[in-house]
Length: 472
Length: 68
Image (tube, rainbow over all chains, first blue to last red; front, side, top):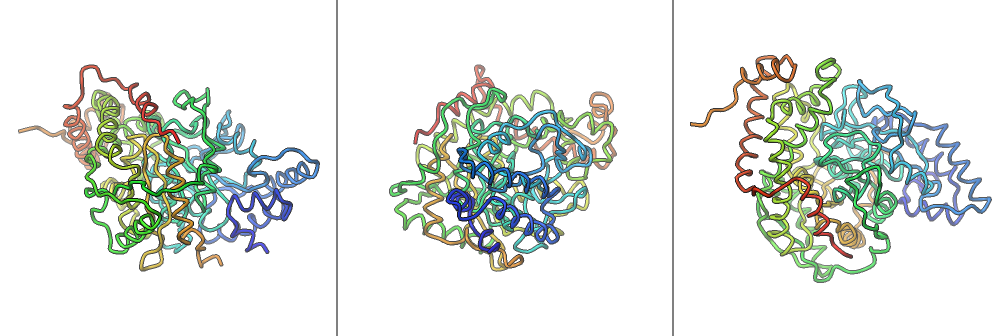
């Protein structure tokens, strides 16, 4: 029974609760039991809030029995990267420095999920201050991949990828500044959205790089992701970077076709160093899109390596400001990974940082002209290799960090500088049984189209229903 | 020939302006990273126009908004 429940998707379990086929208490209890088992093998949680979650589930069931109007996630257990603030509750941000931090405010997205009826199951492991793309964490222990615990989860939303992949919760909020939703989604075999900059409020979350931070859901299916996105997206006076345009019903927009859609495949950068199994999975997925009526168009895209450097200049400079005080007074409380990814920011001239910020519109305009006048979506591998082992991606010294980060984030980081949306979608497995994923990128605020294309792909394939054998 | 930032520059900048003490070896690594990023941004900056300004980015995202 509990295994069947855990294999339901987020939307399926929400519908099952709504139709009274199962109670929130049953679902939440199943999640807690399984989360405890998963935790022993994967270290995906920083905190499992079992008593609080069960109390919330009982309340949800009581309200439903009384006939109260329920939201689209009523009684569904979710867990989030431990950087989503709830006033007065600990939010560690994966760090030693903030291990007892109790923010004074609650995040807008947290409020919106609660208003939709979601249950808070716990805080998930993450890279310290969201500053590495692998899932290493020396303060709370490394997070492990549900498909093979010797391998990295990807980061920085490591626990989100691991817990959703392991079926320890039905969905999760991660954050993406250079790939931090898409990488763990890809490595752990789940769906992950990096939304358009400005679609989803950043109020009440830990900052990493103000100009490029985005909030995104990780789920098992595209439909689940569409539902979570609709709930959390939209205008927020507390985040002035948030768009004021109305939010679409992304789930309803899934209905439709992609016949005639032009999908671009870059001929430069994105396949450099790709392994044979990654190339094969990309070809397979493009064939699936062709079978749906899409046209695949090869094209060269504006130099992603240049965009990568512009993005890194912005994020390092902003992170140096965010962490400057603690790096001066307690540098020993930071891991090598974080220190190494922030230090250069102190020495980048202010004019260089401002050049990088000021060029953003011009680079975006160039990208739109050269790419999105020719195609509707761009399809690339998220990573050019299957997830490496935790040992392979552990830096031995500060000089190793930039190389490891560049190797893993080379295909994800440019999108953050451009502010464009991108969705990581499971595309099968490597020869060693590790997840491989593609990303679909689109025009600003084209999440509805991206979701529709990816949803139709999931109707043609079954990679998203595969469960890690480890926890069977 | 273009000069590149040195470990010494980074250490002195750290001490005098950023209030940071940086070890020699780490300063050399930072110097290389700053040079890489700075060179790339300065090369791209040659394309900037006198009238460019950062706030244009958000406006441009909105202007390209995809209507479903």
